[in-house]
Length: 136
Image (cartoon, rainbow, N blue to C red):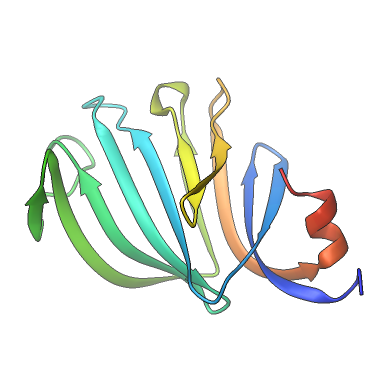
């Protein structure tokens, strides 16, 4: 049973890798501070065994690297709805000022340490034993 493969969301940051059980349609939320505007950005993804889909972007300013078109306003945020397939993996590069927090199905699973690095998110199948040993 421990070697039975199951679908997971893997999150890796600077060689530290964790796996989380994937429901049929999980939500992955990445909240961070934009490094130029120093305002909050929220990227929301739908994740299934098929891969990662960009679902929604929320941001507060139109500065370097931030979208200029949006669907509507929600409080202080500009919101863009998406339905874009990104594949089975996606990467971000973060620096300490980004203060990244990652949630899966509204549960915090990652808070950026005080170092820069690449965060890789991937959908894959791994043995249950690996989830038990790599759950953070």
